[in-house]
Image 1 (cartoon, rainbow, N blue to C red):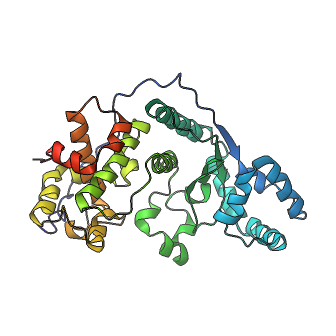
Image 2: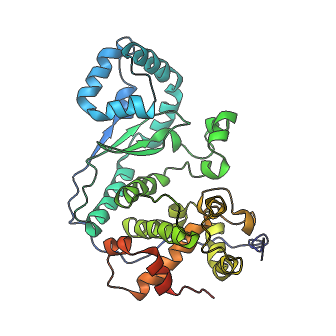
Image 3: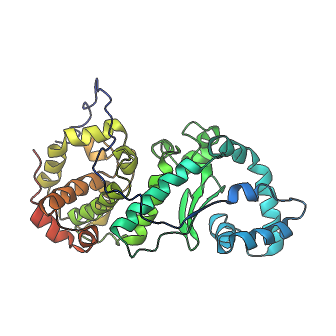
Length: 336
C-alpha cells in the first residue's frame, strides 16, 4: 500500500473543484462591518514627524495600532525606538506597498466576499459577535498574513502578491515559507484565511492529544464549517490542496482509509507519529509525493460529511458539540 499515490496523476485532466452547494439566502442578514485601509494611511504619514503621525493613527485606529506595532511588527515598547523602526520600515517596504496597491488599490470585491462569509456565520451562529472591521496592513514578509485582533480581522497584504512575487524567492523567505505555502500567496486565499480565523474563534483548536481518528474528525469539523461559511468557494482553497491533489484524494479515498485501517493507525496517540498526517506540508510521506500534506483533514472531512448526511437535522452548533468518538462510531465510514 505504501506510495500507492506516486503514479496517480499521469495524464490527468484538470477538473474544477468549485463547489455548487445549495446555500441559504443570507442577503437580508445584517452584518455591521467596516473596511479600514491602515496600509494606505501608514504609508502616507509624514516621515519627518513620525511620533505625531502615529498619534493620529492611534486616534483613527485605536487598539489596532498597538496590535500592529507590538504584535505584528514586534517592535520594542520605547517610543523613540518605535519611531526609528517605523521610518526604516516605510523606506524598506515602499516597493512592497506599491506592489500591493496595484492589486489591492481597490479592496472592495475581497471585502464583500469576507462580509458575505460573515453573513453565513451569523446565519448559522446568530449569537456570535462578528468582527466590526476588516483592516488591511503591510507587515514583515516573514510575519502574519491574517490575524483576528480585538478590533477585528486584519489582512497582511504583503503575503498575497502572487506566488511569483520576487521577494518570496529569497533564501530567507523560502526558509520561512516553502514552495507549498508560497503557492497560496494569491489574493483568492484572503477570504478563506479570514474565515479560518473565525472558525478557530468559534471552535478553538484542541491540544492534539486525542487518538488520530478523533483529531481527523476535529479537523473535518473545521472544513465542514468553511463549507457553509464560504459555500461557493473552491474546495482547493479551503483545503490548501492543488486540484490534482484533491482529485487524487477522491479517486483514492478508499485506499487512503484502508491505509490507516490496515496499519492500525486510527487510534494511535503518539503525537509524533500522528503529526505526519495532521500537519501541513508539501505531501504526506507515507502516501507518496503526489499526495497533499495534512491528509488527516480530508479523511475527517469525509467522516463528518457522512455523519451529517445521516443526521440532516443536526445543526452546526450541535455538530461542534458532538463528541468525535460518537461521530466515528455512528458514521460507519467505509469508502469504496
